[in-house]
Image (cartoon, rainbow, N blue to C red; front, side, top):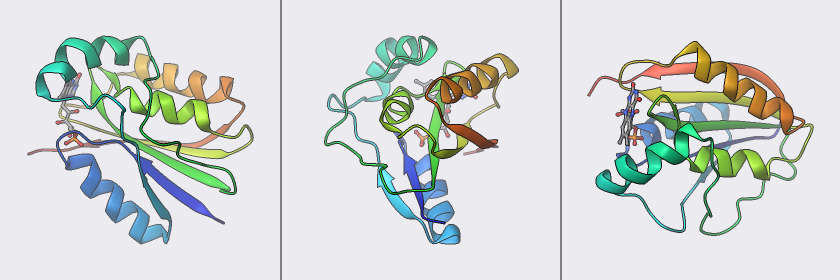
Length: 138
Ligand SMILES: Cc1cc2nc3c(=O)[nH]c(=O)nc-3n(C[C@H](O)[C@H](O)[C@H](O)COP(=O)(O)O)c2cc1C
């Protein structure tokens, strides 16, 4: 099964988990880079609003998920929702792809946002096979 691990990370925590995940699965590692990068400030004032609205932002380059049987999407949780580059990646998934979602947060994730992510993947015509939350203490 050909697998890609696609991730966004602002502070590096999700990157570490994504690297480990890709290594363990022998998967390709794809970094999602927003065209307009976030910093701590813009992440809070702009990114959180975009995250809550499940808004996609323009990415630098076009990650191609064609040819993968499974894509593992990883992102930090911002204001309870996946950081916006996660949404951009979902929009690029070929329908029919098996998807796993792994979100990294400081204090966990709500069931409401988990349900919204499930719906988002379903609307894309993809199958969510696993949904995991990592509580990262730093
Ligand atoms: C803008 C912003 C919003 C955040 N919102 C939440 C939140 O709602 N709930 C939570 O548990 N952690 C929240 N966090 C913490 C991050 O999810 C957590 O530190 C994560 O590990 C960061 O991953 P990264 O280092 O890959 O960017 C937030 C962090 C940032 C920068």
